[in-house]
Image 1 (cartoon, rainbow, N blue to C red):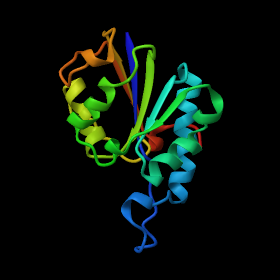
Image 2 (spheres, rainbow, N blue to C red):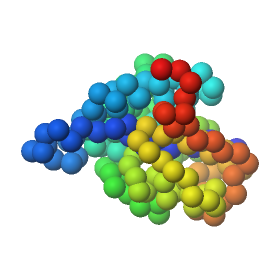
Image 3 (cartoon, helix red, strand yellow):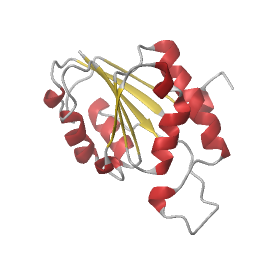
Image 4 (tube, rainbow, N blue to C red):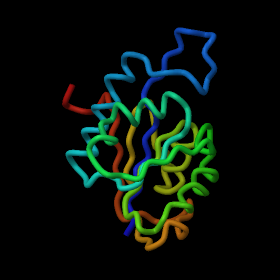
Amino acid sequence: MKHLFLLRHAKSDWADEGVADHDRPLNPRGRRDAPRIGRVISKQFRNPSCLISSTAARCRETLARSGLLESNQATILYDRRIYHATADQLLEVVHEIADEFETALLVGHNPGMGQFISHVVDEYVRMPTATLARLDMPIDHWSQLALETPVDDWQVWRPKELSEP
């Protein structure tokens, strides 16, 4: 059994039009939502042992503010391929996760993140910023995952739906 978390980066700041897309930081709402969604992972689940993030500033900052970097001894990787990746490109990244990791977290962007989870669960899943999805899959090797792989269980958390501030 493998457990994959997909986290769309928190809300980015568009105030400075001169900042390149890849370098855009989080806005105040994003800085507030990232730790909230990080607490969901820490409280309800064993922390992921492999964290893979897009190289974009907003993804790196989301991961840093989630608290997951301080709360466990995870392997942390930054992969430029996740930046604006399609569902198929995200699948390639997942296939490369070492099988020693039972639980992994990808931090990335829409529309790829939403497409990926929607394909796997076979229904449309809305993924606004700072949304977290968890997929429990009956596979032994990450390379066995396909976009049509059935999941044993899945769940989604959106910041606006969380009870804690």
